Image: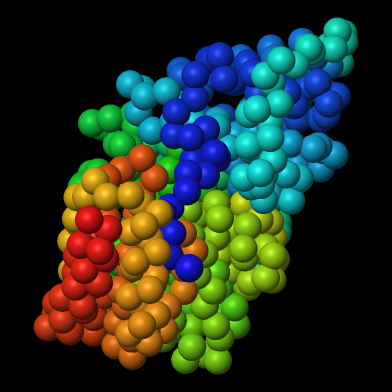
Amino acid sequence: MPSSTATDPREKLALRLTPESALQFGKLVGSDRRTIVISSDRNPSSMMMKEAVIAGALATGGNVHVLDDVPAPSVPFCGIPYNYHINISTITPESLSGMEIFNAKGAYLSAMDVFNMTYREIGMKYPEYNALGTVCHDGEEAKARHTETIMARVQDSNCQVVLDGTYYRPAKMTAKLLEALNADVIIAKRPSSKYLPSLASTELLDLAKIQKSYRGSIGLALNSDATRIAAFDNRGRYITGDQIALIFAKTMNLKKVTVPIDMTCAIDETVGANGGVVVRASHSFRSAVDAGIANGSDMIMDGRGHFVFPDTSYMSDGIHAAAKLAEINGKVKLCDYVDDMETFYIERHSVRTQVNKSDLVANIRKAIEDDGYDYIDTGSTRISFDDGAILISLEEGDDSVTIKCEGRDKAYAVSLLDIAKGIVYDSIKKCS
């Protein structure tokens, strides 16, 4: 049923963490006398937040293991019997870090567990335990096991890779893995900045420039904790997250894939061509991971460069994705896959309204059902057509309704937008 998009408490932690909240969560996980593994990038904000989490956990009896210089996807392979993995990372030195909490299998801690943690602290008297201590690890065992696991699942690549070196730790590990898979790796230093504001093409101009000087190579970039990836094909063209997902879907014979509800229509066709099915979760990638684990998906992915390989761990793994892209390129050039992809055209529209959201949601639902459209609802509403789709979203805390329409050609996308606008505007009028 159509509804407004509810806020996932995990999103808030991932976007902005304060020292006070870091200390609070440290106390909460420590008060259960749990074993905690902590990883972080090298941003000064992340280091400060890490110390706050450690202080909180130790103050209430937690047992803390700090994995230095270990990319987040390697942590599930560390061999330490832990209850929680807390990963702290940020994008720029000007922003505060965010925190993600995972279980021992690399899956996100559930939204309900994080919600309960948040409110459990109110009125809670923390027990007085002596700290069990902090143990620091160099992480070599975790990285070695992670590398070994990937190599057992990925074949030799035999290609040239230009790897962004902005974040040295994940870049170094990825380079060693690719070299072990017979790739020729060039690490591209980034002279203009120590941080990538994002993995968008506009932020990877240095990598693109260097990659073009190595004819026929592919370009790869990881974010600070190696949970996301971006790529350039052999002609120096930026490959979007959607396109990377389509390449994986086309080459890996996936039978069940879980994606966020706003993923491109092309994923359904590509997976369907192999006899597979696509399950759509809510907008949040965390919710997609929850759903993918529950339904036994072969892979979980989104259009922002997140890729979960469930046969290794439930954490998004940019290092594994990099090795897989290099392997695929060693057989058929990535640019050939990009050339063969069908383009779906996108039309967007936003409507601001002050009407009651519950009434609006009910009216939109009734209009869709009265028209007999095939739709799914995961907090946002997606109406499916043979050659495209309509996505209608009502964001919590915002007074706007957003519409995204995809069509096999531009004219069809525009016609879907007209249908969607008619549904939304008529539903708003009925609220007045």
